[in-house]
Each structure stands twice: as structure tokens, then as C-alpha cells.
Image 1 (cartoon, helix red, strand yellow):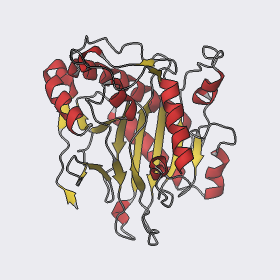
Image 2 (image 1 turned 90 degrees about the vertical axis):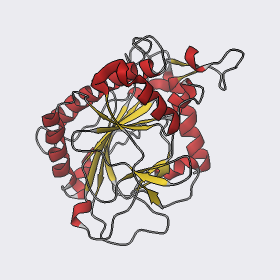
Image 3 (image 1 turned 45 degrees about the vertical axis):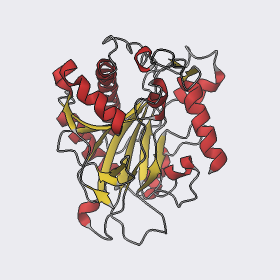
Image 4 (image 1 turned 120 degrees about the vertical axis):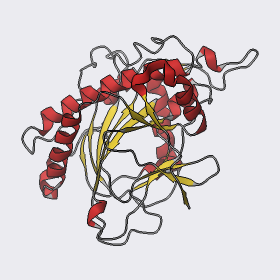
Length: 322
């Protein structure tokens, strides 16, 4: 069953005036829709057009940008070759989508030369060069997502009743992933249990998502176990919290299961493109309970960990159970 939308839209340009609404939403579902974000609409539209053109290329041409090294979240990954439900140990078929991934566009490898395990998190990008201009457009887009991520960290600081600049610096050398997912029209029935994206939680601090409006979209699981559709209006973004933010806030804030459901077969209006940034702070950033999420006499639920170690453990655990 799918319940009516329970994800509020919040104008983040209102600053601290929205703090209580943001806090309430982060505690209840960890999902919100944002307006007032200053993201350039023309850049997003240009990126969407160029990405649709890329995904229309023959498979052989797209596979030219498939990574061959140890870093799996770079370049192009073909249709139904990955599955996010695996991260929960679910034995489900792969997701019905194809993707292009970008990592950091700044080179921080020298800074982390003394931490060998950080190497894949800062691996060079493999960005498609077709159609012409796509590479430059995606780098510009990544930069805007970076800027919005920093703005959202200040919004979250206000919602947590922390100083506005509490999280400043946590994204100076971040290793965030920008994912561009293409969901083509379904031409044949999916396998049992197969979805456009299987149910999962995200690993990082938050995810910021822009998606074209199409049938077969994003759903979030509510506290009562029902699923609610998430349908932002044009120009709005979806923001959801990840496991790292739940840990950072001593689980006061929620990292919630979500999925992308299947549309009817052959429906032309179901072709969908989503562009999101999975926000991962600096690899060596300490993730420890923020002071406003610890009541007198209460102990943190988790020991201190670095952002890099947190993501590494999450990935290892998903591989062990998949």
C-alpha cells in the first residue's frame, strides 16, 4: 500500500525560521523536499538533456566509460548491473537502471597519501565525453551540489540548535558521489522482487536529489510501515538523511528505507532521470555525537569513527551479506 505524500516542502531560504520544521521532519522520516535553494535551473536542465542524449547512445559506446580499476563508483555502469537491496543482504535481482557516477572533482590524493585506504575514495573521475559538452556540464553540476550540501549542513546545524557554522569545514575534502541514474521505459516484465531501485538506506550524511517527473518514482517507508510517494514540484529537490547523520545525531534523526518502484510496462511517460549527490564528509572527519543530541547522563550509542571508516564498514558489510 502507498499512502499519500507525507514529505513536507520547506523553503530553506527562510534560514533559522524553518529550523523547527526541519528538525521535526528529520526526527520523523528523515525526508524533506526543499525550495529556495538557489540551484541554477538552466544548468540542471542542460545536464538533464545531455544525460538523456548520453543514455541514448549504443551500449558499446557507453561502455567506453566503464571503470576498470578498483573504484567502482566512477564512470558508466550498465543497465541492471548493480543492486542496492544487496546492501541490506536481500537476495534480489539487480536494479532496473543504468548510471554515471562522479567522485570529487578536486584532487585530494596528496593530502591523504598517508592513508592508503582512502585512495579509492579520491580516485580520478571517468566522465563521458559524449555528447560534446557533457563532461564540463557534469563538473559544473557537481560544484553546485557541493555548494548546496554546505548550505544544507548550516540548515541542519540550526535544526540541531548548534552554532550555524558548527559543520563548516566538514566538507573541505569530502568524497561525495554524484550519481546520474537513468530509468528507461520497461519493455518486459521485471523478475520477482525486481525494482527500479530496491529498498535501502543511504550510507552518508545526506543525499540531495533532483529527478524528472515520471511514473514509477521514489517512495519512502513511514514509521507505520506504509510507503509514501515523494513527488517534488518542478525546481524542488529531495533531501534525505543517511546512516552517518543518524549516527552523528545519536539516532535522534532518522535514516529511512526508500525505493524506486516500477511503472506499468511500456509507458512512455515512465522514462526517468535522477541526479543525486551522496554527501560524504572529509575522509578523516570524526563522526561523534553532537552535543545537543545527548541528554544529561546519557551516553552516545556509538563510539567515535571517521567518515571514511564508517563508509568502508558499510560497504564491507553489504558485500558480506550480498
